Every structure is written in C-alpha cells, then in structure tokens.
Image 1 (cartoon, rainbow, N blue to C red):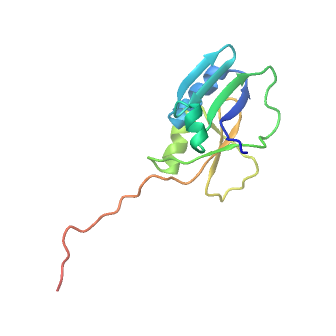
Image 2 (cartoon, rainbow, N blue to C red; image 1 turned 180 degrees about the horizontal axis):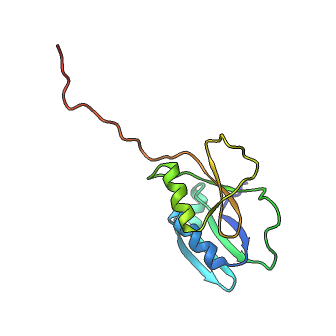
Image 3 (tube, one colour; image 1 turned 30 degrees about the vertical axis):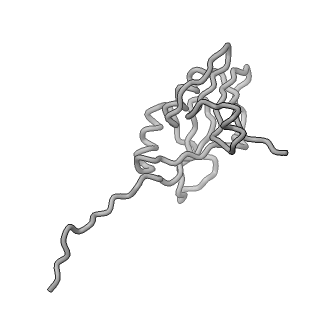
Length: 141
C-alpha cells in the first residue's frame, strides 16, 4: 500500500493572482477554476498516470480569510533551466516576487524570494546547459 504526492495546496487571499504568478514562474497552465480555488499544473493528471508512478504534483491555490503570519515551514525550491540564476531572479522580481531575508546569511548559493503574498521560495543553481567552445581545428607543431 502506498500514496502519491498529487497536490500542493497554498492558502492565499487571491488565488487568481497567485496562480498567474506561479504559472509564469513554472510554465504551468490552469487546469481548473472554481469559486475561491485555482489549480495549475505542467500536465493533465489522470488516475492511470498517477498509478504508474510519481508525477509532478499540481498546485492548488485556495482563498482563505487570514493572512500569512510567520516564515513558511515548507517552501518550494526552483532551478532555472534556460537562464543563469541571476537572470532568473531578475525575471521573477519583474513578475512580482520580492527578495526576503529569512536568516540565510549573505554567502549562499541560492536566493530567497517571496511570491506576491509573501510565501518564501528559493532560486537554486541554474540547470541550463553551459556553452563550451570546441576548437574547429587542432594546430600541431
């Protein structure tokens, strides 16, 4: 007997705004909308796909009346796949993220940001392929 991690639920004031932010960050699309709830994902989950093995969870944003009060005990880490870390941080700040200090100190290999409702997340090292210059001809003497 086992279970699958299928959804990450985020309490928030404005599900539409937060879903739009995370869709832009992750390249996800909206799967479903209802009153006070928006679900996003990178794929269309089916029972068959979930039963065959672990798949990326969907993210569900649910409207709640209370605001965020303290540092998250759970947060997301994201890694850019087609840009450097600094360029990705700049892009995310342009989408509405903010730099935050959660006591991480100045010399870290990651950057701590917060989404538009203050939920912390980390931008880790880039996974973008590095460009190597390959010589076209070898010179021998």
